[in-house]
Image: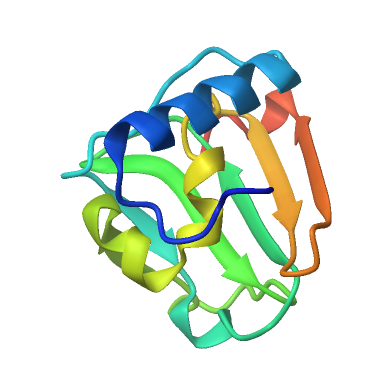
Length: 123
């Protein structure tokens, strides 16, 4: 998504997130920066980047994000506070206000696919 460079200005982030939610018909549900998400850090150099949001629980926002191919390995994801995502993977920040059940696939060449799968809402 255009403008998804270093995401640090809260007003700009909120505008991008609201616009994306409106574009895809999602309720605007930005995560609390103190909450954690599951991030497969070891895959972040691989494209595309994929994300799925389930219902938040136990101090998490419900987001799970990885690059390239998914793995079912128990240690595939590690926790990361949302407040650190602007350094780790700023290109996903515009998508993080999408409601549970939404998924996205993006890459560093401008590809974007966003959709809703109701069965993805629960863990």
